[in-house]
Length: 370
Ligand SMILES: [Zn+2]
Ligand SMILES: [Zn+2]
Figure 1: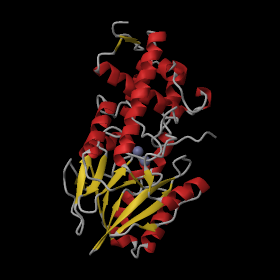
Figure 2: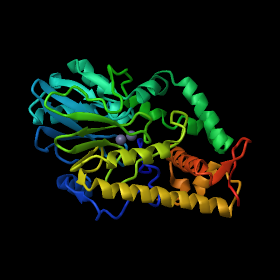
Figure 3: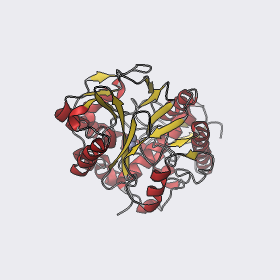
Figure 4: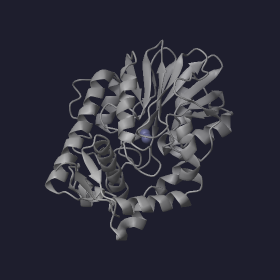
């Protein structure tokens, strides 16, 4: 089986995994060691009432999601929840225990975005604790179609894939490629909606919600203004670039949104970044430079591809780009993710008036002025 991720990464494209980690300072040294040893990192107290709890992920190259516990006088607030599996539930409860709490002490779950590894367990936590679940409205809006009544989304996905140039024979398999992960989500609606700049009610903390669309339309980071930590979800990770894909549940230009949202967090005074995967680190500004460079390189690569072969579909362009392994070895799910990334880049080039798309189906792309 390929190392398919069910959450974010494109198929680890050429620049998707950044080898140059020198520019950032990995503060999660035990996490990094565990990563290198291919074991789950420990539950850690990070000081000033913050805990990091790795919750394992099934069948994923990401291995685990880092759930954060924020101590408060009357219990604990969680950032993200993990998948809805028994292993994840056990790890979450064990982590709470290590921090001196039990599930009934959880007062709120602030969820960075609705992907299964972040949202999946939130409902079960609420059932067992009475905690509230908070989410950005843009992710709350797409939740019913994504996890509850999926038929119309599947229909739209099929049309989208056809328009993008996916061969007719692969359409049905590819449109349902994400359905297996549906089982890892307890699909519930949130209790609280958090907009950009909102301050969730977490006694003892000065948290601010920072809306960072791109990876997901309603992605939120959480910034503590006194501790100067950024709980970055999947928006900024130390090693991999988050998957920024265009698809039927995305914004019009998700990569442009993502790049703008990088500026938003770059403007914060951040001492340490607490990501949802991999390991915590210092050096947010440097990491943002790396992420921007990656996307500019990708934009150049696509421009060159269209110069050499005008009139390609997004699917054909995706197949021709550099990925970490041969296209034929990439799973349907990851191929769809790669197509989404390619489209996200094409849409940025279109918004810069560098490329245009044809009107037929499938859509064919060409350079403007070529
Ligand atoms: Zn995600
Ligand atoms: Zn994730």
